[in-house]
Amino acid sequence: MNRRALPSLLPEIALMLAVAASVAWTAWRFHDLGYLPQPFVFDTNDTFMDWFNTAYWANHPGAFSVWRTVYPPLSFVFLDLFSLPGCYLQSPFHARDCDWVARTTILALYGLNVALAWWSFHRTDPRTAPMRAIAFGLGLPLLFTLERGNLILAALPCFILAHGPLVRSAAWRSFAAAATINFKPYLLLPVLAHAVKRDWRPLELAGIATIALYLVTLAIIGSGTPMEIAANTANWVVFQGGQVWNEIHYSTSYAPLLQVRNSQIPVLEFVPSRTVEMIEWLVPVVIHASQGIAVLALAAAWLQPRALPSYRISTILLGMLLVTQSPGGYTQAFLLFLVLLEAWRGIGPVVAIVCAYLLCLVTDWPLSTVLDLSLESWLGGRPVSPSFGLAIGHFVRPGLVALILWALALDSVARVVRAHREHRPSLGLVPA
Image (cartoon, rainbow, N blue to C red):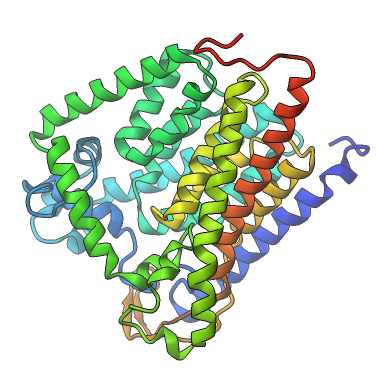
């Protein structure tokens, strides 16, 4: 490393070391307690269950009619390929101990994600790549995804190839984008950056590939029609409406806090009613203002489609979704990858990058205990008595996501204003 460049790298080195220290602290706590403490999931016996619950239905009929999943068919085709059918004759919990292929695949995908992220960051800026790759690989969003065994582990490599700097071929990028959408439909939003920039050919290719992949996997599974997924999504929304604590626990948005007053958990014993009233007034303001600044930045990008890189527009589109509602805290992995492609230059990008590092911290500061449990710890291999409750992270992390959106949106508007000095705004469907 060039000694002259070292002073400019010190902030990122310090932030990376803070992330590494938080991981070490969590590892020490795990060794002491026998389970992963908050902010990880409070059901200490449920490790990898996002993967194995889904894999169970990949090996049994009824995923859409009985389990009423909202996952598109690709998830079940993928899990059927990477599982041992004989391990799913009883329950997902039995399969977790039996299916070594699935466990190996989970760990291999985690390693692949870290490797692809490092390669992408190195391609963008070799100087900052080590710090960003370590923070991303050891950060809370990806470790939380690993602990859950969520299929984000399978979608993220495709996302990196679709939106990162590693692949130049429009066809391969479009196919990778199609895979991300078929794993996680909300990842359609980052692909719409092509529409904002009026790059119609990649958008058309991604659309055709998405539909083709969906139809192929639908034919293989034999279920998962749009009507089934729509009905199951409506059922899921109703079900999630009663899971207030699960929604608040690791959220990208302040929206779940609006459900606190009607929740069945005694949150009001720990939060004064005046604070709740302030939350109910402030949360809609933050969400609507964030949506407004994002729309303004996207409109500006439309006027000067060459003023912003595609990944910046994808970040704003995805950030607007995550501020509005929370598909789960682990979805920050997609957002953080895009943010860490930014250069450490200018107030907006620097603020966003610092927020990304802070979101990678694997720790929390409990404010009060809501749940005292007696459970088994699958990772610890022994009975444990975990305590979980309201914590600083419940209020800080959604704010950091919103701050990323604001920082990059305002910087984008400023870039477009500067671009107007040299280029006339482009209003047609084809950029001038």
